[in-house]
Length: 313
Image (cartoon, rainbow, N blue to C red; front, top):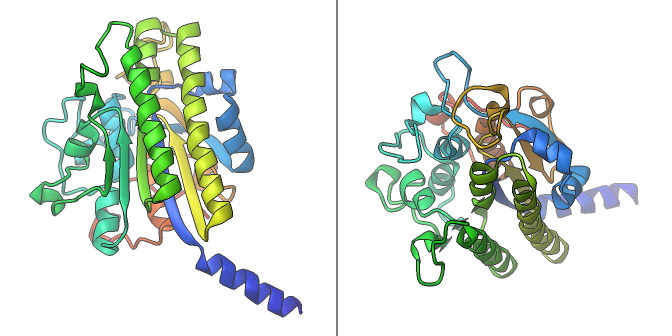
C-alpha cells in the first residue's frame, strides 16, 4: 500500500507543469523590507524563502556595475553583469544580445512556451528583451501589457507621479487576469512607483506607503498563482526582487557602490533553497534558477559565461 501511495505521489509531482513569474519592484533597500515587514512578502517568505542579495557586480573588480535600474533588470534577465550585457544606464543604448535573456533561452529550447510581460516601462520589452530584433531571433512575447507611460490622455503626467502608481495597478491587474485565464509559462511583472517615491521623498512615510502599496499588488499575483496550483496541475515559481538599494544619507539616490545601494533581497515561494540562497545570493542568480525550475537546458556556450548560479535545490 505504501509503495502504491509513493508511486501515486511521484506521478502527481512529475505531472505538474512548471510555471514561473518574476516580479521586480523598483528601488527598495533590504533594510526597508526588514523595517516594514510587508504583509504579503512576509507571507511568501514564511511559506518559502527570503534572503539579502546584492547587485553591482564585484566592487572594484571587472564586473562592477552601476546600481541603476535598467542595469539591474538586465543582470536579472541575462545572468551576467554589465561588462558583458553592456547596459550601463537607463538609456539602454547598446545591449549586447550575445548574452541572451532567460526568455530567449527558453524560447530556443521550448518554442511552444508562452511568455508574458507586464511592465510600467516599454523599454523592458523593446530594448532589454529585444522583442522582434534579429539579434534575438525575433523573440515575441505572447502577452504584453506595457507602454502605458506614453499614454498622457488616460494617464496625465503630473509631478506627483501618481500616474505611475495607477499604471502599476493596471499592469498588475493584467498580470493576475492573464495568469488566471491563460497562465503564461514564464512572465515578468515590473513595478516602478516605489522608485519614484524614493527619489522624491527618500526614507520617509510617502516612500514607505509606496512599499506597502507594491506589497498589496504582489499579494494579488501571489493569490492568483496559489489558486492556479489548487485548481490545475501546475507548480509555480514566484520570485520577487528589486534592482538596487538607495544611498544611506537621504534614501533618494542610487547608482554608486555603497553597501546600501548594493544590498537588495530576493523572496521566493520555494522553501527548498540551497547554500547559494543563504550565502552570496545575487540578482544574476535569477536566470539559472528560472531555467532550472522550468527544466530549460542552458546551452554550454551560455552556461560558461554566466555569473549567476541557481539558488534552488
